[in-house]
Length: 150
Image (cartoon, rainbow, N blue to C red; front, side, top):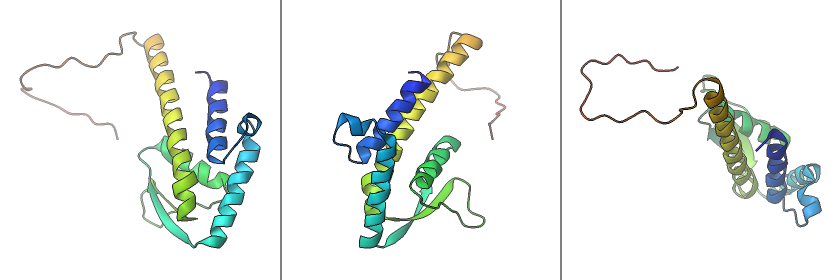
């Protein structure tokens, strides 16, 4: 999948979670964003917002969640001395359950699959075509020195 195809699929995911009903609507990301904002505004008048703490496993997921929150005019924050992997926001529960979290999960999956494909292709072309896992050996090590990435 190339970048243009990925962008189109990302827009489609958002449109589907916005309640697009026709193919024309499904292709209109701007309309989807406005429908989602309108739904959020309605939910904010119907029910109180709850403080959510999202714990993001990596930089990519954190960037995605921050972007989604800001896209819908939700202000993310964290408290002093909290880890950077924590994102907090005050949002109606129904919006999180019906729109934000399902959209995040689908977009995250699409992006991770794309990043995996790109990484695999670059490593195999630039470094080694053999990107298979390490062989498994029986027995245990005699002496080990470990190195762990930060």
